[in-house]
Length: 134
Image (tube, rainbow, N blue to C red; front, side, top):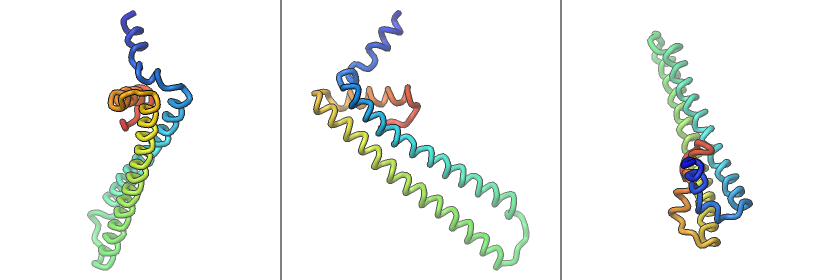
């Protein structure tokens, strides 16, 4: 019985926000969370590139021109991955800012303090979506 009363009292501040607004904020959060999937793809791409390099090229003897070509190609590929991570990071920051602004507007409209509301929202998204905090 104690756990059900805890679950009912767990999101007291979020209950003050209308369900439609909260759903809109959670939809914005869903867009923010999807960006992290792309980060995983980039990380797997880096790991795959390193694996291919180590299995296919490392340890073999090449002429200096072939070696320089391989090295330059690997540097360019890794720089592309770094560039992708930077672009993804900028997009994630913008999406996070949009979610935070929407939550802040809701807190002002319904006279709720922002910091406790943000903590409660973070708790909700961590338990429900298993996603990052805002």
